Length: 519
Image (cartoon, rainbow, N blue to C red; front, side, top):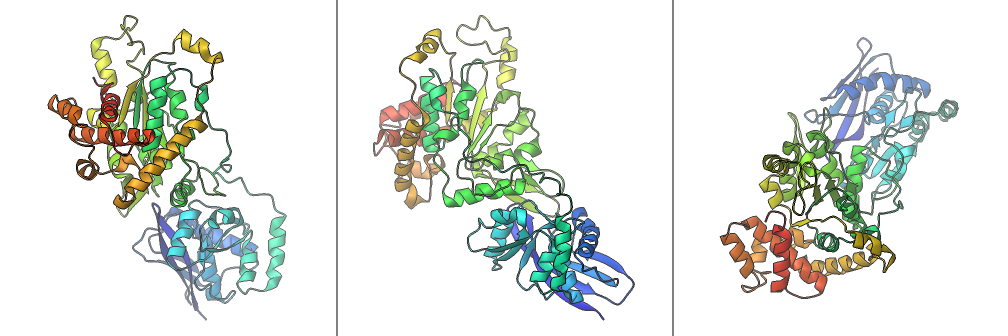
């Protein structure tokens, strides 16, 4: 006699989750096990995992024809996290357990019946709760991550037999779970160890000299601006960039949930708590387009720019990156999102990050000052720096030259110590508070995101203040986008100084930071 039952799981496309009905039917025909509904290779392979896991849980599958449909059938289903939902639907159709109802299952099965951790638990549980299915079952290793979602009723199990008993199966099956507990420990989760939130952050007090560099870093942190530093090797460009996250404010609840969801989907680390500090990504210059922007075969994975969401993306030795990789940053810098298109689906990932670029003045790095020590020809210098295209540089708010540290600056380190990150972070926090108060009515968060139309009207600093910008545009040294960038930085300077409107001095300093490299 046949049977029918249904369970639920989640299919992720980017960070967007879709509820999937897992329908199981036990037929009267010859034995077989078929999964339909656009499954990928991992879902198709689940048939063997499910058969073995059910046998080791004391509830072998029926020898009759088993058909499983993953609905909606037009949505691609990828990943091993459908395993538990499929086995629960099949065993409910056999009458071994009662129908699971609205419970959402999100875990992989081992051959021995153990529940294994998977990627993307946080966005999947968030999607389930938003769709009105707050009851979620995950592996024991993923429970802490699932419980980060407010409103979720999370339960977990280490073995399939425990889960079956909880859903009405014979309690005698617990003996199979106890037998499985004595088996060898499964392989460590390939996602790695949990991220240590308390890891020490590099401090600005370690940076010697570089007055302008420290000022530019503070401005970038206060207004969310992008930054380019050009200088010889050993000047301190990397040291400055690595200290930017240390002066940024903690993430708010919504930002923290977004950032943790991206890292959960990427699977680089187990998420046992929401990430509260802005992330920092510093990929090597050999990085590929999919690794930077996201992609890959099968499920499109978030790239480095999404892992840097609400944080910092640092490209050291920027001219060494492929030009097409650098130019791929232009669209995310404007929109704050990245879209990865596939034949059957389109994945959207957040990518609202601060870009920090560091570059040598030329390939040999010695084209500073008189440039007499430089061994590069004029053509080589132009070719080296032309990797940073004009449209990309036009999107960078702050551009400055970082000179080599002098012996006097280095020897004066034993005098009064440089200002530390905590002191700078307090000023940054005050400036961010002023921006939040001023921009709340306009739906903006920081000065770097203020629309140009607003800067021309409601937040214009006045004709006298923008007079230098008019001259720069007439001389073709400043574009219309650059005009807006300068005004945004001027507002950040005003916030740091505690004034209610940018002064001509603020605008002049903002223009200096915009044009000092390209001048």
